[in-house]
Length: 173
Ligand SMILES: [Cu+2]
Image (tube, rainbow, N blue to C red; front, side):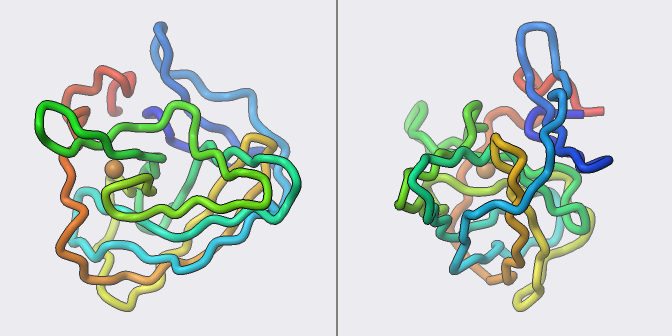
């Protein structure tokens, strides 16, 4: 397992988090349907390895909602929540420890060069026009199911500095 990996089992959502003592599974959140809304979803077309997913997440409620995990079991072994930051003169991607917070009555745009969903350990290619089923999981166990369309996009080629090192991911088994 690796940080950001999620499992849905027996009515609960489990999320792997990494800490000083390696990776552990959360105790499991009771599942419910999330009030979040997502629009303009798309995934960068890619053959293998990793790719990124985008969209605009809106929170229609009066309280902030935290997205802490994501899945796309048909296309990716792991989906992480990433942000991009300038480091040593290059744009590098980092896993968001606290997830994405969607403000009350506000929205968060996942876009190239900013926060995004990272589909890792791809199981099959994402081609242009392909519909990729995904689910977001929130800190109260809410789930938002949606589809994102494959789209050819030349940007969003930020480096991922943790790949291969495994330092923050508790090993990739
Ligand atoms: Cu990324």
